[in-house]
Every structure is written in C-alpha cells, then in structure tokens.
Image (cartoon, rainbow, N blue to C red; front, side, top):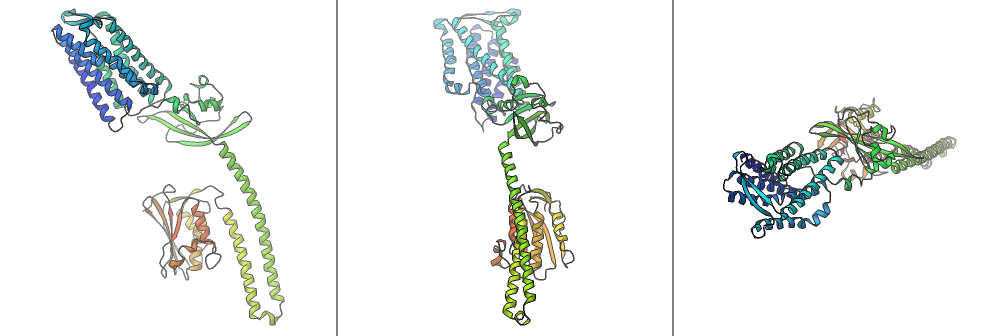
Length: 564
C-alpha cells in the first residue's frame, strides 16, 4: 500500500513539475502530459485504498473511483504521443473532444452499473496468501472499453517507436524514454487481465506507475524530456532544399534527407549505415575535422552527369551533455552564385584590362602634351616668354596637365577597390607600414601598440597613407601624428590625430567629397570609399587652429582584439 501511495505522489509531483515547466510556454502536449500524471496518481492512490481496506464495500467503492484515472489515462497518452511525435497532429487537434467522449461514457456506465450490470458482473473478496484482495467479474461493456483503451495505448507506443527509428539525438533518446515508460504498465495490466499467476488477484499496473514515474523523472532531469520538443520530421527535414546528413563519430550515416539523397543519386536504404566518404565518392571528406570541436565549413564541387555543381558544406558537432555524438552536415547549393561570381570576375578582368590600356594610352598622351608644352616654352622669343599673360597661360596649362595625370593615377587605385575580398589586418602594422613612406620628413609618429585587427579591404593601408599625406599637405608645419584606439559601446574607434592647423567647421563634411580640397581632392574621397566597403565610417572631429583628428568607427563583428 505504501508503494502505491508513493507511486501516486511521484505522479503528482511530476504533474506539478510539468505545469511549472510549461507555465511560461503552454503547449498541447504539456497539457496531455500533466493529465497523464494526474490520471496515474488518481489510479495508484485509489488502488492503494482498495488494497488497504478490509471491508468489501469500501474496496469496491475505491475500485470504481480508480476508473476516473483509468478511463482517461489511455486517451491522454494517445493524444500526448500524437502531439509530441507530430504523427496525426492535425487530425488529433481537430477531433480532440471526440476522443474524450468514450472515457466519459465509460465512467457513466461504470457508475450506473447497479442498474444494468453490463460493466461489472459482480465482485468478491479472495485471500490468496492470507491477504484480502478484491476480485471483479468484468462485463461486456468493460471489455469494449478495455479494447478501445488498449488500441489507443498501442498506437501511442507505435508513434514513439517510429520516432525512435527515424529521429536522431536528442529526440531518439526522448522517444526511448517514453517507450520504456509506457511499456511497463502495459505489461503489468496484461498480466492482471489475463489472470496469470499471482497477478490474477493483484493488479501490478498501479505499482508499475512508480517505475514509470521514476523513468520520466529521470528523463526530465537528464535528457530535458519536457523541454526539447521534436517537430515532425516530414514537415521540416524532408521538405528542406538543402542536403541534411547526420553521421556518427566514425562518419557512418545515421540520418539523411531527400535532398541529400537526390544529390547523391541513391536510395535511403543504400546509404544508411555506410561511410560518408562512400556517398559522394570522396567528394565530401571530413578527415580534416576529427576533433569534433566547433563548426567548420568549406566549398565543394560535385559532378552530376555532365554538369559540375558547387556547394557550401557546413559541419556542426552534435553533443549530449558535453559528450560528442556525431556531426550534422548541411549542404547548400551555390552553383548559380558561383557561376555569377565567375562571370563577374571575368567581366572585371576585361574591364580592368581595358582600363589599364586606356590609362596607359592617356598617360602617354599627357606626357606628350607635357613635353610639347616645355618645348613651346623654350622656343618662344624672350620678349614673349617674359609676358606675364603668356607665363600665366603656360602655368595653367602645366597645372591642367598635372591634374589630369593625378586623376588618371587615382583611377588605378579606385579600380582596385573591392576587387579582392576583405581580410583581417593589424592596425598597428598597417599604420607603421604607411608611416614608413614619410621617413626623413621631420615627422614624429606615435602609433599605439595593440592586437586590434579590423576586417577591411586590402587597400586599407592607403587609408593611413592618405590621412598622413593629408596632414602634411594641409596641416601647415605638422610635426607629430598619432594613431590610437578605443572602444565605444560595441564598436572600435581608430583615431588619427596631428598637431596642425585643423579643419574649419564648414569643411568638416565637405573634405570627403570628390574634387574638394587644395590639390586633387581625391585622397579623402578614396579613404571613405575604402572604409565603406566593410561598413566603417570616418569623420573629422578636430579643433580648428589646434589639430586635425580623424575618427574611424569600426562596427561590431568587423574588429577583434582587446581595446581599452
């Protein structure tokens, strides 16, 4: 009797824990789980009273009260299994109320049995081993109820069994927990109904609920049985356009979806249990990543007929409670993107080739103009050459030729902008490299030593070169230039500061526009273009008359290292 009451208490505690666990996230299956635990509790506690009392009338009274739990347990188990596994989910939700009609009707027939005698034919007390136990003679309505309940229980077990076969960790573990928990009371009930051995008088079903409750409690504590809810595999994994493969620790395939099978040109039965390297003929090799620590990815190409297709391969470790279980492999088709990128590369090569040829030809013509201008100046008569107007014309002509030359040179830098993928670059190293070009010009550079790296275009060195050059050209007697770093919220800020005359408030925004400035007006325009590629921004925050200060803001994710 004590064990039965303990079983009821375990079931009640599980129901309370389930209610608390899902109080913030109410789902249909959590409701059914709570009802299962309450039904078990009601059954076990009342059976304890049935066994404990001596009076036959009291035994019979509590035996009938047990059916308040017995009648609903199979139904809520079936609904729980259907909802949790995703099998027949829509059908169950649509007809949920109909499933409860039969147990309600059975309880009414049981309570009115004294009028028709179709549920119980009678009862008596037998004392095998000197302990009085209630023996009930079941009527035809009971057997109809029993068959209906047993069918629902078997369907629920079948749902979890199919889930156990199809799913991978951690869902397979959960399905195994549910199967074990369900089968123990079923076996006990069959032994009692079939009147086998001592179970003809003693019903072990309520007692077995103690074991069931402990299994479920272990599942909740160790395998997050109530917290990880599987989604129907057919509606998610099989409908994916990307290939999905799960392998064990030795790279043997334990699960695969339709998209991956079509890519390999094989049937599921051919690949399950086979090594991954056999699936694509060595096209997918995970031998580089045997440590199972972290994710990794790479691009692969697979030949399908006469066509070669390109994919990104992403591999993620699967772990349970910190221990490796295998790997999840996702294969995403990037053939169209790859071909587009290749076409773009070819187009860029052609454009760059044409630009280089055109730039070379223009520079040649500019050099010719410059040469002829000097010859004209030399061949002019002395009196004409000394004419201020002629001198002004020649000076403007030379200045125009020089401007054209500088702009053509600028197009080479701008042409290379964004052609090569961005890379991680050390700020200290790049700044020092740019400063080296100004050695011997009487400048003192103070560049902060730091492990800060930014994700930037390969032309990033020109940012510092142009900023340093801008200080020398416009700062008027600049003697010191410093480069420092700091963190502002989630961003990093690079500060380039000089001790020159600074920038007027009116020009702070205009200096980054094209053709604004004393010379070509292209240096800071190029700086902003290089930074823009990876989301960096630049602004001038100096004080006119004291210093020029350029602040480069690097967004989160585009910098790494320690910044004070």
